[in-house]
Amino acid sequence: MKILVGYKRVVDYNVRIQVKPDGTGVVTEGVKLSANPFDDIALEEALRLREKGVAEEVVIVGIGPADLTAHLRNGLAMGANRAIHVTTAEAVQPLTAARVFLKLVEKEQPGLVILGKQAIDDDANQTGQMLAALWDRPQATFASKVEIADGKATVTREVDAGLETIEADLPAVITTDLRLNEPRFIKLPDIMKAKSKPIDVIELGSLGVEGGDHLKTTHYAAPPKRSKGVMVKDAAELVATLKQKGLL
Amino acid sequence: MSKILVIAEHLGGKLNPSTARAVSAAAAAKPEAIDVLVLADNADAIAAEAAKIEGVSRVLTVTRAENAHALAAVLAPQVAKAAAGYSHVFAPSTTFGKDLAPRVAALLGVAQVSDVMAVEGSHTFKRPIYAGNAIVTVEADPAQTVVATIRTASWPAAAIGANGTPVEALNLDVALPSYTRFVELKQGKSDRPDLQGASKVVSGGRGVGSKENFEIIYKFADRIGAAVGASRAAVDAGYVPNEMQVGQTGKIIAPELYMAIGISGAIQHLTGIKDAGTIVAINKDAEAPIFEIADLGLVGDLFKIVPELEAALAG
Ligand SMILES: Cc1cc2nc3c(=O)[nH]c(=O)nc-3n(C[C@H](O)[C@H](O)[C@H](O)COP(=O)(O)OP(=O)(O)OC[C@H]3O[C@@H](n4cnc5c(N)ncnc54)[C@H](O)[C@@H]3O)c2cc1C
Ligand SMILES: Nc1ncnc2c1ncn2[C@@H]1O[C@H](COP(=O)(O)O)[C@@H](O)[C@H]1O
Image 1 (cartoon, rainbow over the protein chains, first blue to last red):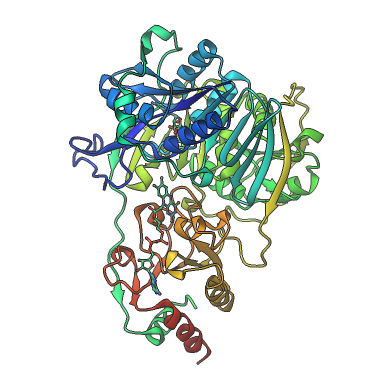
Image 2: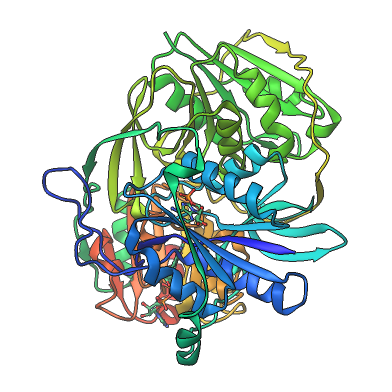
């Protein structure tokens, strides 16, 4: 079985995001970029399935600008067999990303596609579900445990009510939650090895994906600030203050 | 004029309050009609509850055995078909809505607006990105159906008390896939208020130190009638179950009172509580970032302070 993994590059989760004063975007110049944390988890899960003998090949996919190569090399150093780089100068919205993934699925015929549950830049939480719909295959979102056997995935999902388990026939789309696994660290020798692993470069325009992103972002604003409050000296004062506010 | 279809969320035969919050957001778009769609194996009781939400024009039910569990692959084709004639489809931005709505949007071939926090016009919305560190205004294409999830913490529940709202059964006649099957749901049992709707929430973090120590948090929460939440670190360490996680990738909540105990205040946690009325922080580190946003802060050891709070309440 082949596993396709979404491997998006985003602003690192430790960066304090600044909105540009003119409201046209957020500052990304000189800011640290990293793999979307949920995608590192997706890749780790795919690698573990390969190590268990469930899968033979792990292919990472990045949709983005020309300079995505270094980022994809990281995923290859982590252990992916090869990478597909779909090039586009503009950031793509989830429906377009899902349509791109569908084209790659048709070409690669994977048994499993593992994506992050959300990209921490747009926080959309859509691409995996959209791909599953377009492909007319099962989806198991927010996975915290995955077992593959007999052509089926048994997936435990983190839902608001607790933990839900569902069974999905393969091929299927899984999206990862935080507690699925802990991604491994990249080792130095693997960085060297990754240099010779193949990266297929495909121009988005050549895939014949139905056109266009549908949402127009017209303005960026900083969130309303909560002002710093007051410090109280002890438990008694805290309780008295909360009672006075009618909160206790 | 717009017509909005709101997808009802329910579990165990009961309507989830997130539905009434999505109705509030729908009302803000000033539509000509707001219909609530209930997909269930036994829809009557749920539909009766939905019919009491103020502002709802009609409740539509689709009763099928396949709808016994909320599997997105099964529900989405039905919602997509029911969406004909509507300008908007709204679902709450809970794990239910997040799972289902994008699948509906893709079947309709349209984009989705996730986590709507404000409605500026029928096709203009505000939503958070980068863990809430930026708020964007987005415009959806007026020529297409708008599929959106509603950030429940941004919207009060629409009032309950409507009378005589019609309930109509729909027969959609769509083929449903059987490639996804429900196995089980392990639900944390608790008599405490629901985290997403509670007016008071007490949360513990890594500072609480262990599953056993978390009893201190539960006991105090019960004393003041609060729901209990946690940071990701507390969930990861196994102190509490996953459904208690508050934050960017957990639950986004807006209680009147939020008490963060032994939580440092990472940006991903703060995203989940920004809309709380009053935030209280108890932390032994005076430099903890949580104090930057807390309305009331108290520096000290939680194992000493929490019992003192209980004593002060008694006094
Ligand atoms: C993609 C991504 C998504 C994430 N999503 C979430 C999310 O949804 N929710 C979330 O919470 N986090 C999330 N995180 C994790 C987040 O970055 C932090 O790691 C986490 O919130 C830290 O939890 P904490 O404050 O409990 O632990 P710590 O940061 O370790 O803080 C513990 C605090 O307890 C205090 N303390 C210790 N002992 C005591 C004592 N005896 N008395 C009083 N105070 C004490 C310490 O001073 C410290 O401030 C996410 C991270 C990533 C990368
Ligand atoms: N440009 C992209 N390149 C690679 N993977 C992507 C891209 N966009 C979305 N994905 C995948 O889809 C997941 C969910 O993204 P989103 O729907 O934007 O929150 C991500 O975690 C990735 O696995």
